[in-house]
Image 1 (cartoon, rainbow, N blue to C red):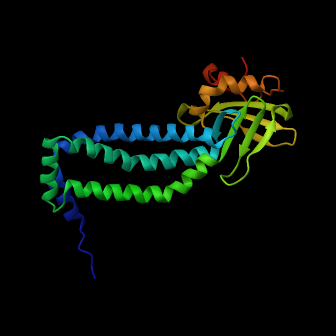
Image 2 (image 1 turned 90 degrees about the vertical axis):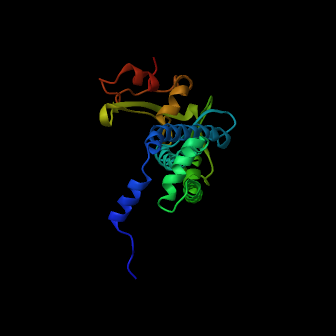
Image 3 (image 1 turned 30 degrees about the vertical axis):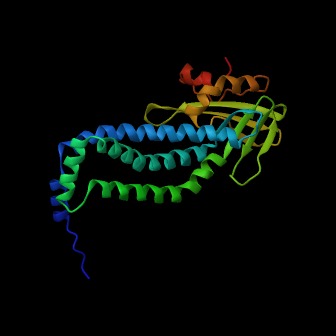
Length: 239
């Protein structure tokens, strides 16, 4: 059986569905997607404190988990932001009527489109939720006396006393598109290395407290580039 879908017909339906209101929805949709993404990120990072040790003042996803977490939250923010945008415009009767008219021209309805979008959001959530659990379950935490690490969500968390930290190596190098990559590697007496920065943006608010905990350890500044701006250097190096 041959499919009836043709590109020419799809473009024709798109032209019939065009309306100035759809163009107005684009910037609003972008704002909603960004707002949802940062809301997801804020809630996820604060959830880390519930998963970490009670005495820890700072917890962050591991470097790999941070990348996974950002990608998952970004994918989930897309349909959620679109649903919120549609809901906002749906509240305006003039817009609702205009969109219903253009959707009716292709035998569709605005409410049906939103319903299908919501179903897709639920399906994506079910698929990506286990990956999100991995992102918030693979953590590094710092307390006044101990550094903790859990590599996998189901693994037990391991504590390394600050007194057993043999070396602290701050890193600052040039990243892609003119940015900077920073890290704060600590090495235990057993040779285990842990990056305490994890998610850069989240770490910045706690950098002063983390550095204060490690100030009496042995520091190696050889991995800080000479052209590293002081703004980045101060995040991972002692004053």
